[in-house]
Length: 175
Image (cartoon, rainbow, N blue to C red; front, side, top):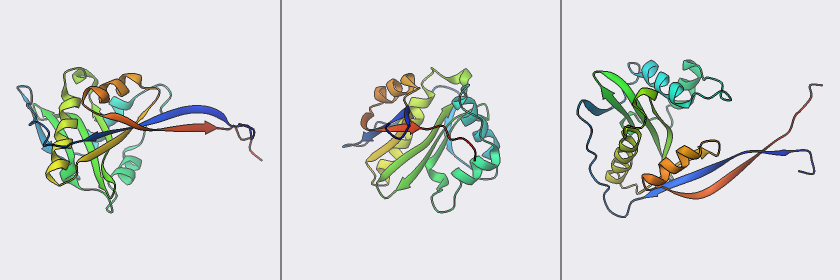
């Protein structure tokens, strides 16, 4: 603060720890889960994530930038990317990575028309179950403080807050 930085957002790291196998997920009639198919599902999944994350203060991410960030060969495993599908339309996605410290859900999104129907919770629980079968019992993610609804959602599916990261900003004038 003495250097002119001002508090900005803060982020919560949420974590799910499974001591026993998570319950089997039951999907609603007409909805099924499947694994991401690189090169086939890219555009549809990107659109789901963009529509789910859309906010006035968040600039959209281009498909190319999203691919570069999310499909990195050193961390991408398609069998950890789960898609909720209804009538051959991708309606939700849980995109996770397996790090040395445990599982990490990098992006979770559901199309606005399908939000509030339990799709996101089922995707997360399915993700937790898949990590558990791999011997990974801890799965975490980060949520922006500007999304208290998301924070409450993650608590309802059994996650707890384990850390908070504070962001400070400063306005810099061009030289």
